[in-house]
Image 1 (cartoon, rainbow, N blue to C red):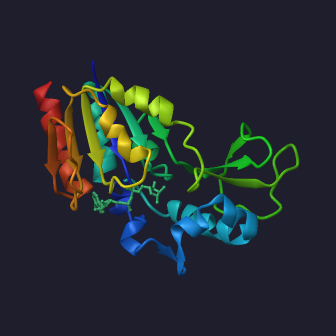
Image 2 (cartoon, helix red, strand yellow):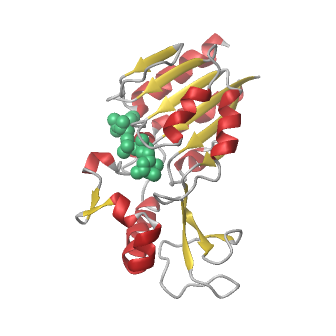
Image 3 (spheres, helix red, strand yellow):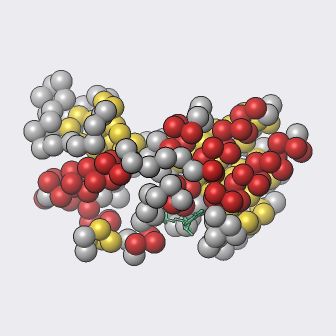
Length: 229
Ligand code: APR
């Protein structure tokens, strides 16, 4: 089977009702997202950080995968599909995709602040100050904050360097290192970038830009890719 890698960003989930960061001017309650999603914010105002993620987690229990997420699942019939997402929602998994790598963490997971290997899945939306891991330390969102390393970037780079097909969906391609991943795809691989605003990408060979919403562009492209195999 040919290897197909999906790189998805916030636009992938926009039609499910999950707002993208930069579409709301990058602000949350008048704070820049970078000021909330950061280790310094956690140190100075953990209550605000918990509230930010609690609201996002709560919303996650109210939204559903869209036509784009669902179409990607069908690709698994004929391709070896790996999804590498910048999204912290679980909509790819809920749609039925099997291999999903979350570069920036996962909203429904939390982890210990003294032992990062202690990761737990929440079955409810609220993480409170005072909720502790089994070693007695405060739990934090299992999210890669601005200024933190991206632990899975090495694996993601390896995955994309073996791709035959790459689908970049709904990302402004401005946040590194994720935005640089496309540069590791083999020159010969066929690449598609689906985003209504599709930012200019230079120096990438075999790239087809599709200026459409994920809910329209992804099902159409998936149908084409399934016919062509
Ligand atoms: N279908 C496809 N793309 C869409 C849609 C849609 N319906 N609606 C919006 N978009 C596109 C926008 O045109 C934009 O290019 O989604 C992109 C969203 O860009 P960002 O909000 O910058 O999201 P993303 O690229 O995922 O951001 C990367 O930045 O804030 C951090 O860690 C956070 O993972 C996030 C990272």
